[in-house]
Length: 304
Image 1 (cartoon, rainbow, N blue to C red):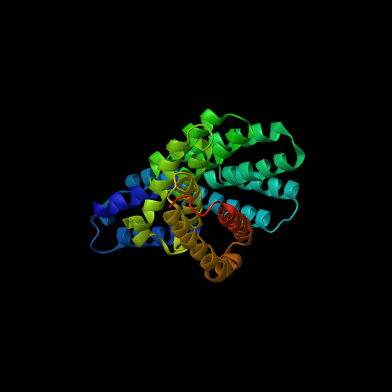
Image 2 (image 1 turned 45 degrees about the vertical axis):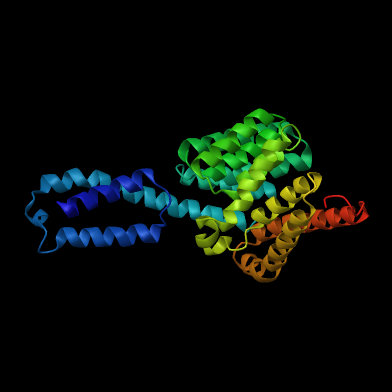
């Protein structure tokens, strides 16, 4: 019965889930079929009717695996294409081939967002938002989908909806450092105390289990460093000068370490992400330098 359950679970998984690679699917299938055909399996004595009943599920899984492979192929073509219009075309082909993959919808939304910013075309933002909502319907628990949606809503001037999207992202992933940072920045003007509380929560993650056991690819968390810079600004206004300076020093060490150690690795594996994060880190270092210059010009007795 265990092998029968494994076989059924495999087929159902292929019908509804898109996270596995095709190679992993085929390996799992080979393992399950091996169990079914082994001498210890009681299913060897089952009639052909049982196999006929299982065949549609297996065909659905195989059809989905082929779709996943085609979608991955088109997505790779999109990544290799410099022209936004052609890249969008290949991403649309990827979505058609693998309609259950929310990642392709999000990639299309991000591409349309950048295109809208370059051209000022609000209709592309609306289309990107529609794609983002479709991705959320497929993956309602992935915090990254809500972060993209929040960014689109902010660009459209719908800040209340953007705030709800970011809070939803944090409900599904309480340690999403980027979502915390973006929510704090969104509340900065209207609710500065609430923003400061979010920055404190963000900075506190560094000494939490998240900070000690986070994945290798997040070992230099630039969003934690950004939170420290934002919190330092609040602490300076409250007169906590030494703590503010300490946060700036810690943030600069993290950002410099990211540039020297992790960024070259990221460039080799994901050049687009590396370019985006490098620009973000440079903007943070510029903010940090500006803060220090401003504080040096302030009266020496401030914050003591």
